[in-house]
Length: 222
Length: 252
Image (tube, rainbow over the protein chains, first blue to last red):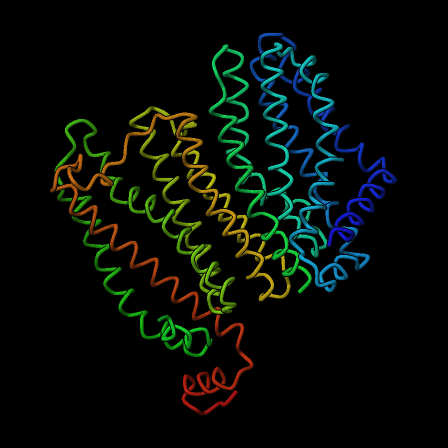
């Protein structure tokens, strides 16, 4: 079991780093979406600070939808997903590893990017710390819940827009709590409650999502 | 304990059950809906503050309550289908999805029409309005996912997973937007010990609520019959049914 998990982890990491352009594209998309906001709304520092947390989170969700598609796609088309299912090992554990790798390669760079974004949108240091904390707690939730829908749509020819339609409503609570945490930080108020709720949602997703992903993949594989 | 339920996993038995249940849902449903609406719209007393425009409550509140109940019913059907691998449960689920979406739309539309005279605006980003809108998106997601698959059995399973993900989210969405922003008046009839509505106004509302619930059940049963026939049209029992319906002259 452990060798299999280890092997999948190493293989997925290697694959991800050999397709660097595909890794970089969602990040570039994120950066460009954020550039559009000051251009469209106006570069006033007060306005930017007010909309900043929301803009960063919305851009992160949109970029994650783009990046999410490749989570199971290649494995589905070259048949390795089928082999995982036939291997007799727990598909939930395999799915959990794949989600972990996906988070490491597509969301961790985003967190590293975030100081630049905070600078662009004129966030204060308190707001930036809160933003970082919500990103660290919230993006694994995006990966886990998103993977369920990716598992369901992986066999479809044009799953991209459908994926967004399925996932955006599901991500709304996270957006609300995350931006409200950063807003509280801007007013020097405590924001532990919001972080605690995001953490609770993450725990729930960590406990249940791998099984849902495994079932979804089974449905897609038919 | 649940053994008596198992035969209904067979499409034929489920179809028979639908045929039996339909009149019990349809006629009382239409009766209650008409009675509740007429009583509420014409005979219930005026509101001292909102005048006649409060009367839209007799359509708005039942549809708002039932839009959520229909989603829960849909998710229960999805759970039954996923756990016990019943094809008929997925058929029931997909029969309910468009009905729920329409009821949600009615709740939103009547809410907007009520909001215009009361709040002076068609739409505000208030907690309940927003969660109702998100509920509509969840319904549309389930319907879109179901439509994306060629193989309808696979489609049912996939849409079922999404319905279950949605139902876990409904309370989270509800409370998150509640804390986020609230302008909507508090619930009127959920406090059963002492409702904040006069009994003359409450009775037609409850009748309209029961009526709409029965009507939704009736339409669900009708859609489910349709779905069973569409999936099983090559089976002998459906051919027999068609032959009997046509009087036996033109056997299929």
